[in-house]
Image 1 (tube, rainbow over the protein chains, first blue to last red):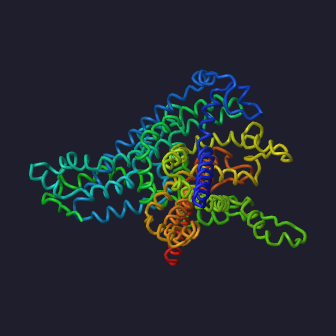
Image 2 (image 1 turned 90 degrees about the horizontal axis):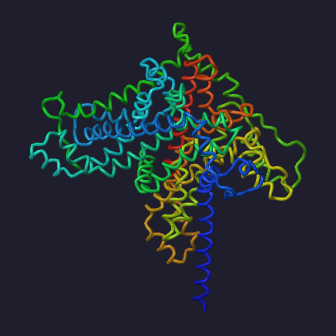
Length: 285
Length: 333
């Protein structure tokens, strides 16, 4: 008897635990789900004082209106994709190559270089905002995708170097020796041994870099806000919000939906990599 | 420990560590180190971007101007409740004072501080609560973890726009729910109320960061050997006792990390204010970074010298607060 009462109590506890967790998780997810559903509602249902989760009439009006009226949106999308991917490729290339040098070689100045990377990581990026603007302006890189890509690369380099350095240090020396005996140059050793061995580290750093450049706001707003051809999604969305908030939130939701959906889907497929990248990033930073 | 190569005798060549470091050093030096140092240099000049020919050295005048700038250093206009207290109010008085203090708009510096004061404690406590629950959820814990992590991958811009609709005075969910409660009237004008705007933004930020900090706590919890808690339970400790005596002390480094990251992030808050309130109503949500951004790019004069000084002053402040936090955490151990 006592045993079964105990069991009933434990089951009730588990039930309560799931209920609480379910409510908290719903609070995290519902706003996004609700944006998706609201973007499929007609104007009259969105601007209603009654709480309705599901659209009464499903409509794609907001999306057709968005494609008609928000001409810049295509540019924002293209720019965000190009800048983020460019940053990931450039950062991983330059960062892992530098990490290789710092992890596997001892040479004069290596400690100093490491220290400079570490020290700069401690300084909030916003401090360089003014200097960056002046620099990009002097070299006519304002409102160019190149300028923004180089900026983001510089920001993400230090962290990438630290992540990859700790990965490369763990690669067994015998593998390098074997490659050297086979006549590989250090450069070839990097590509044939280090890159494959550090693949999961590269993936984690890559998602971290991708996410931070896809979502970055203040530098994109400062450097690339002159024309639609240069704006990235966060800046463009912010601009559309300013123009549309008093007019039609449904159309705005359609654009917001399209801007967060790819990242959420990417995350759902690459969860482990995302979470590893972000925790490693936080602990090192 | 892995053995380390010594750079080959031919010091400058393509197949040397120097060459491997070159791309990173060039990009990092030009686009990260140089701008930061340039900002420091500019902070000692009177310099308007549109009039570079008038640029001249002013020493610490910019920093002195910060100290006297009402929009930065104005003290909070705290209005304490008047009249005598009845007995039952006395225990709540410190809480009332704390609440009024945190809600009193002042200069940008004060606003950044009070945003931090709202954001950091909630960010230390709530994700810990969530992480502990998720750890106990067994097979479903991965599912709950994923769900709560989703907001983390979404940008500040998107989240701000969604929450502006949530806070919409007429059609927003917040007020629709409040109107369902009898006696609550029409709800609040969240973002256009100088007392409510900052807490409303802070609440959004806590929600946005929940999943990320939950993850940090989950990593911290996994590092605690399960045997310790099990042994305590076998010895007759209740769940709460086991948590307080074993889990909590071992989790302190994680709590410190979460708190420190939250604090640094909170002092740099920018996008949420720019999008949702633009610093208003009045200056009640004007943060330090938003103010320096406005000084540099929006008020028309492009005062790069003064804005650089603001940025560096903030960075130095963040550095010292972090240092103090580190000292305190070391002392306690």
